[in-house]
Length: 298
Image (cartoon, rainbow, N blue to C red; front, side, top):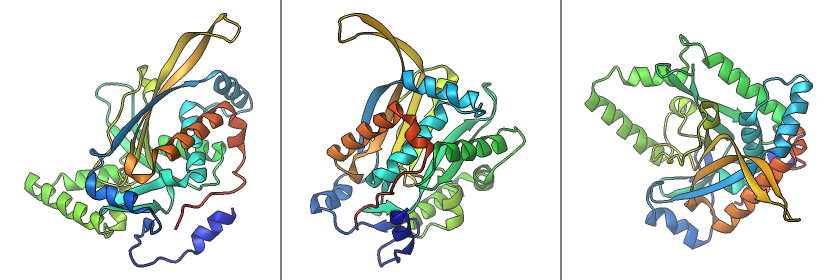
C-alpha cells in the first residue's frame, strides 16, 4: 500500500508518457538494446513449463463449495500474474520510441469467443487491476467483462473503433495506422485509442484449455506496448518417478510465454517465474492483498 501511494504522488517529468514513466537509471547496456533490437519480433524470448495443478484443483473445489462457482483456471492465472507484477515490476515495463518505460498501471487483455462455434465472432476485452487485487477482485472483474461481452449482438468500444476504421478505404486505413504508430512512438497516441486498444496492455492471455488443445507460442505485437503474451492449455496427465522410486501420475497444465527480452535481464525473468510457480503452489496468498507493492526503479 505504501508503494502504491508513492507511485500516485510521483510527478510526471520530461520524457515521461501518460501511460508510463521513463526509467532513467538503467545500465547503458540495457538502454541501447532497443536501438539494436528495434522491434518486438527481434526481441522475442520463449518460455515453457508445466504447472502441477494438484494444489490448484483442491483449492478450486473449496472455492466452488464456498459459493465461487465460476472460479476457474483463467482467474487463477490472471490473479497470479497480477500479483507477480505487483512484486516484480520490471515485467510491467514496455518499449516505445526505443526507450524503456515503467507502465503506470496493470492491465490485462483477453481474446473472447462469444460462442464456441466456428462462425461465432471474437472480441477482445481489456481489464484494469489494482496491484493490491486479490483473486476475488480478479474473479469479479473478469466475470463482469466476459458477461457484458458474451452476447452476439453486443459490440464493445474496441469492436466499434475497429468497425469505424474499416469504413474507410484501405489506403486511408494504412495512413491512419501509420499516424497512430507515429503518435505512439512519441507518447502522443490519443487516450481514447489507448483506452480501447488491447495492444497497449501489461500482458495478453489466452485460455486454449477452453478449446481443448495445448497452448501455442503467440507472438507479441509490434503495434502497441504489450511485453508479455501467455497461453495455457488443457489438462494433461503425466507419469513421473517419485523420490522413493515409485511411479506416480500427476495432472499438469502447460504454459507457454513469449516476452520482450529488452525490458529486463534473464536473471530477473528467472526469479519472476520462480515466484509465479510458488504462487501456484499456495493460492491462499492470492486471497488477501500483498503486504506491500514493490515499485520499479527510477
